[in-house]
Image (cartoon, rainbow, N blue to C red; front, side, top):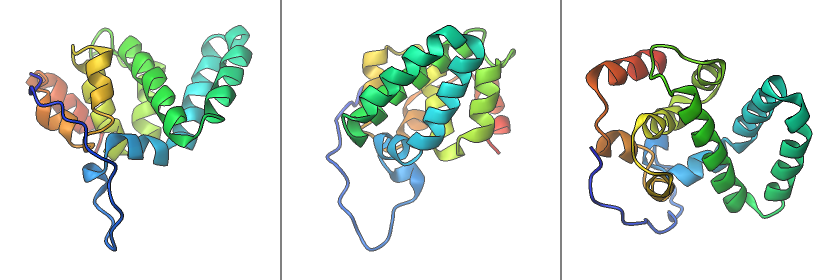
Length: 156
Protein backbone atom coordinates (compact mmCIF):
# COMPACT_ATOMS: atom_id res chain seq x y z
CA UNK A 1 0.00 0.00 0.00
CA UNK A 2 1.38 3.40 -0.95
CA UNK A 3 1.45 6.02 1.77
CA UNK A 4 -0.13 9.23 0.50
CA UNK A 5 2.87 11.39 1.32
CA UNK A 6 4.72 12.48 -1.76
CA UNK A 7 6.68 15.52 -0.71
CA UNK A 8 9.89 15.96 -2.62
CA UNK A 9 12.85 16.47 -0.35
CA UNK A 10 15.26 19.26 -1.07
CA UNK A 11 18.77 18.18 -2.04
CA UNK A 12 20.60 16.91 0.98
CA UNK A 13 23.05 19.26 2.63
CA UNK A 14 26.54 17.94 3.13
CA UNK A 15 27.63 17.25 6.67
CA UNK A 16 30.80 16.04 8.29
CA UNK A 17 29.25 12.61 8.85
CA UNK A 18 27.91 10.97 5.72
CA UNK A 19 24.39 9.56 6.19
CA UNK A 20 23.73 5.86 5.90
CA UNK A 21 23.01 4.91 2.30
CA UNK A 22 19.42 4.02 3.19
CA UNK A 23 18.84 7.62 4.28
CA UNK A 24 20.26 9.16 1.10
CA UNK A 25 17.74 10.26 -1.51
CA UNK A 26 17.28 7.49 -4.04
CA UNK A 27 18.48 9.84 -6.82
CA UNK A 28 21.84 10.17 -5.01
CA UNK A 29 22.21 6.39 -4.80
CA UNK A 30 21.36 5.98 -8.49
CA UNK A 31 23.92 8.68 -9.31
CA UNK A 32 26.52 7.04 -7.04
CA UNK A 33 26.05 3.66 -8.72
CA UNK A 34 25.33 4.94 -12.25
CA UNK A 35 28.49 3.46 -13.75
CA UNK A 36 27.74 -0.10 -12.63
CA UNK A 37 24.03 0.22 -13.33
CA UNK A 38 24.59 1.58 -16.84
CA UNK A 39 27.05 -1.24 -17.55
CA UNK A 40 24.51 -3.81 -16.36
CA UNK A 41 21.73 -2.33 -18.52
CA UNK A 42 23.98 -1.97 -21.60
CA UNK A 43 25.22 -5.57 -21.26
CA UNK A 44 21.63 -6.80 -20.97
CA UNK A 45 20.56 -4.92 -24.10
CA UNK A 46 23.62 -6.27 -25.96
CA UNK A 47 22.76 -9.86 -24.95
CA UNK A 48 19.05 -9.62 -25.75
CA UNK A 49 19.05 -7.46 -28.89
CA UNK A 50 22.47 -6.77 -30.44
CA UNK A 51 20.82 -4.75 -33.22
CA UNK A 52 19.33 -2.35 -30.68
CA UNK A 53 22.50 -2.15 -28.59
CA UNK A 54 24.24 0.43 -30.77
CA UNK A 55 21.23 2.79 -30.78
CA UNK A 56 20.79 2.26 -27.04
CA UNK A 57 24.46 3.04 -26.46
CA UNK A 58 24.14 6.27 -28.44
CA UNK A 59 21.07 7.26 -26.45
CA UNK A 60 22.88 6.48 -23.20
CA UNK A 61 25.82 8.68 -24.19
CA UNK A 62 23.48 11.50 -25.26
CA UNK A 63 21.75 11.35 -21.86
CA UNK A 64 25.09 11.24 -20.07
CA UNK A 65 26.04 14.60 -21.65
CA UNK A 66 23.03 16.22 -19.96
CA UNK A 67 24.75 15.87 -16.60
CA UNK A 68 24.70 13.38 -13.73
CA UNK A 69 21.26 14.29 -12.38
CA UNK A 70 19.47 13.94 -15.72
CA UNK A 71 21.43 10.84 -16.65
CA UNK A 72 20.61 9.21 -13.32
CA UNK A 73 16.90 9.98 -13.74
CA UNK A 74 16.92 8.47 -17.24
CA UNK A 75 18.87 5.43 -16.05
CA UNK A 76 16.45 4.95 -13.13
CA UNK A 77 13.51 4.92 -15.54
CA UNK A 78 15.14 2.45 -17.93
CA UNK A 79 16.22 0.15 -15.10
CA UNK A 80 12.81 0.27 -13.45
CA UNK A 81 11.15 -0.68 -16.75
CA UNK A 82 13.56 -3.59 -17.27
CA UNK A 83 12.94 -4.76 -13.71
CA UNK A 84 9.17 -4.56 -14.12
CA UNK A 85 9.42 -6.54 -17.35
CA UNK A 86 11.76 -9.04 -15.70
CA UNK A 87 9.54 -9.46 -12.65
CA UNK A 88 6.29 -9.70 -14.60
CA UNK A 89 5.68 -13.18 -13.21
CA UNK A 90 6.67 -12.14 -9.70
CA UNK A 91 9.64 -13.56 -7.89
CA UNK A 92 8.86 -17.20 -8.71
CA UNK A 93 10.76 -17.02 -12.01
CA UNK A 94 13.60 -14.53 -11.84
CA UNK A 95 14.84 -13.54 -15.28
CA UNK A 96 18.47 -13.14 -16.27
CA UNK A 97 18.27 -9.36 -15.80
CA UNK A 98 16.67 -9.61 -12.35
CA UNK A 99 19.26 -12.16 -11.19
CA UNK A 100 22.18 -10.06 -12.42
CA UNK A 101 20.62 -6.95 -10.89
CA UNK A 102 20.32 -8.66 -7.49
CA UNK A 103 23.90 -9.95 -7.69
CA UNK A 104 25.61 -6.79 -8.98
CA UNK A 105 23.72 -3.85 -7.46
CA UNK A 106 24.31 -2.97 -3.80
CA UNK A 107 21.34 -3.85 -1.54
CA UNK A 108 20.90 -0.19 -0.56
CA UNK A 109 19.87 0.54 -4.17
CA UNK A 110 18.51 -2.88 -5.16
CA UNK A 111 15.93 -3.07 -2.35
CA UNK A 112 14.02 0.14 -3.18
CA UNK A 113 14.19 -0.52 -6.92
CA UNK A 114 12.92 -4.11 -6.60
CA UNK A 115 10.19 -2.91 -4.23
CA UNK A 116 9.09 -0.24 -6.72
CA UNK A 117 9.28 -2.70 -9.62
CA UNK A 118 7.04 -5.18 -7.79
CA UNK A 119 4.55 -2.51 -6.76
CA UNK A 120 1.55 -1.58 -8.82
CA UNK A 121 2.15 2.15 -8.54
CA UNK A 122 2.55 4.19 -11.73
CA UNK A 123 5.88 5.24 -13.21
CA UNK A 124 4.97 8.84 -12.35
CA UNK A 125 4.55 7.91 -8.68
CA UNK A 126 7.83 5.97 -8.85
CA UNK A 127 9.67 9.13 -9.93
CA UNK A 128 8.64 10.77 -6.66
CA UNK A 129 10.79 8.19 -4.89
CA UNK A 130 13.91 9.68 -6.48
CA UNK A 131 13.48 12.58 -4.04
CA UNK A 132 12.77 10.44 -0.99
CA UNK A 133 15.26 8.55 1.16
CA UNK A 134 16.10 5.15 -0.34
CA UNK A 135 14.43 3.44 2.62
CA UNK A 136 11.07 5.14 1.89
CA UNK A 137 9.92 2.62 -0.75
CA UNK A 138 10.15 -0.33 1.65
CA UNK A 139 8.46 1.76 4.35
CA UNK A 140 5.64 3.06 2.11
CA UNK A 141 4.87 0.06 -0.08
CA UNK A 142 3.44 -3.09 1.40
CA UNK A 143 4.43 -6.13 -0.65
CA UNK A 144 2.81 -9.53 -0.15
CA UNK A 145 4.69 -11.37 2.61
CA UNK A 146 6.05 -14.08 0.28
CA UNK A 147 7.48 -11.42 -2.08
CA UNK A 148 9.00 -9.50 0.83
CA UNK A 149 10.61 -12.70 2.16
CA UNK A 150 12.03 -13.46 -1.29
CA UNK A 151 13.44 -9.93 -1.64
CA UNK A 152 14.98 -10.19 1.83
CA UNK A 153 16.48 -13.61 1.01
CA UNK A 154 17.99 -12.38 -2.27
CA UNK A 155 19.46 -9.21 -0.80
CA UNK A 156 21.39 -10.67 2.12
